[in-house]
Image: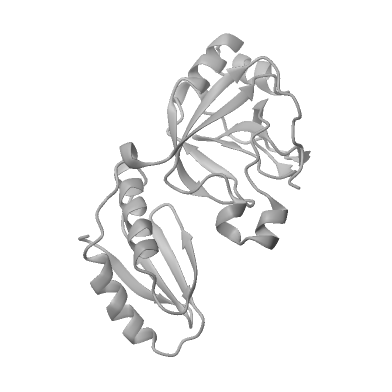
Length: 229
C-alpha cells in the first residue's frame, strides 16, 4: 500500500498514518491494513488501536523497535484496500422511541417519520470504535439529521441507546454519561464484560472498525439489555 507514513510513537509504539481525511477510501485502507496485520502477526505486538486515519501498534518493549519498523514497512507494502462490499454486515433492530426523537425532528424541521426513515435507510460504516468499549461511530449520516451534541450531557445514558451526535450516529455500548441525541434503543449487545474477562477482547465486541450496520425499525424490543453483563 502506497503513501504510508510510519513513525515511532512513545518508547514502544509505531504509528501508521494512511490517510489525510476521513471518507470511504480511508476506511477501505484501514480495513486492508487490519486484515494484513491479522493474517501476518508481528512478534511481541501487544495491541492495535485504529483511528480515523491511523493505526497505533504497541509492542511489549522498546527492544528491537528499529527492526520492527523495517518489518512493518515491508509487510504493509502488500496490504490492499478492502472495499465495504467485503466487510461484515450487521442487522440491528431499533425501536424508535428515544426521549430526544421529537425534539430532534422539530429542531431539524422534520417529522418524526422523516427522522426514522432517514436514519434507518442507509447502510452505515463503522468508522471508529471509541469513547466507551464497543461504541461505534457510524456514518455517513444524512446531513438533514446532523445535530450538535447537547451542551449539558446526561449523567447516565442506558446501554443500547441509539443516538445522533454531530455528523455521526452511534450506539451506547454500556451505561455511561453522554451528550448525544437519543432517538431509539436496541437490544443488540455491543460489549460483554464477561467475555472480555474470560475470552479476550475480540470476542467481547459485536462490531469492529470497518464493519457495516443496517438499522431495522421495530415496534418493540423484548428483553432490552441496559447494561453489559
